Length: 521
Image 1 (spheres, helix red, strand yellow):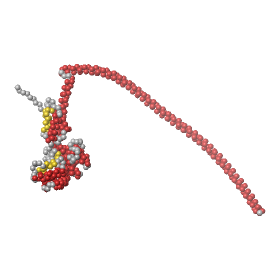
Image 2 (image 1 turned 90 degrees about the horizontal axis):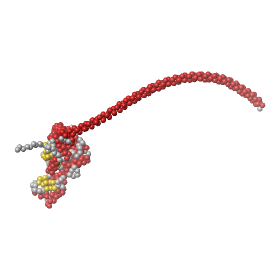
Image 3 (image 1 turned 120 degrees about the vertical axis):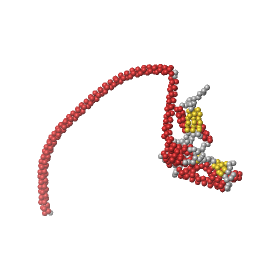
Image 4 (image 1 turned 45 degrees about the horizontal axis):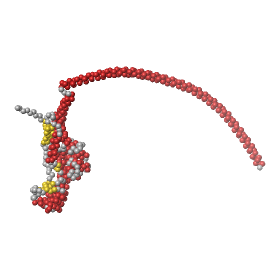
């Protein structure tokens, strides 16, 4: 233990001495560093003071320069502002000078206007005085003229108006003649050539048909067999066909009478078959009537197809073709409607080709224009209305429908093809031998013509001549002058066009005759 203590003690002393030396050395080193730091700090402070002093000097110098530049800029801007103010002041002065000049000019103008107003007022007063003097002078002149002429003012006015009316009537007549002659010269030649060519090329039949069917018999004995016991055969035939059989004293013939042409044709075919067969009894009559109906249906279809092929109109609905075929058994004033429709179609097509219009469309409208007549005895309404309804039902074009509506003037034509249908219909209906009128309708038309002519003042007599194709009017020469009768002819023709329906044209012939009669004693 003592040995251990003796060993540790020296080590402890050495450690303490070493530690003391270390602390001493550390303090010496730190002291040396502090001295160096103080020296560096002093140098830094000196450098900072020098930099600060230099910066102050530089800032002061720059401040002086900027102040100088600012002063110069202020001086320059002030000079520019002074210059601008001076220019504006000069401009204001110039404007003030112009305004003063304008005011002076306006003052002078106002002064001149006032002088003119005064002068104008004086002139107006002078004019009023002169007018009053002229009125007095005019009244004196009128009074003097009335005294010299022997006419009052109103009488003279009426006299001058009469002279003016006569002059105007003369000029109107000359103008009417001039325009009519010019229009006729230009249109007549072309129209005549076109219509003549169309009619010649069409070459239609000129015969008219009757509406009564006659069935020839091999002998008069056949009449009794047709009547049958207690009239049962004829009653059966009339019941099945709806046609009256007229069996009278006409030799070897039976007349069929009925409103419906189709039924009348069925009765004719059935009766001809019965007469040819010789067996006539109710059962046989019923059988033959049914066969006649089937045969007529085939004939109607064939006639419709023939008309379509003959006119070149294709694409028609089968029902329309059947309706066209029915027109074979329909007449209008004795003219067969199917032949009339074919004729109108051909005429309209020819005229359309010559004029450069749609010939196919014109032919189609011409063939269908009277389609309503095929069933007008079955449905209420005019044949035009019925035809339009049929064509609308089968989707025909608007141009064709309008042509059908307009062919009797019920509506205005909307195309040149519609106008051609009107012309072709009139040509077909008015050509010689095409139609025959009933006596009653014929007399009514003549009476209407004379009634229209007699309604005009100055007409002495009027005569409808040439089957109503001409109206001859005799006027009183003391009431109607030569110029006035030209105007009258025009007005009569216009009244006839507006109030009457007629085929073709009617000539209005006004006659004025002056006679001087004296007796030798």
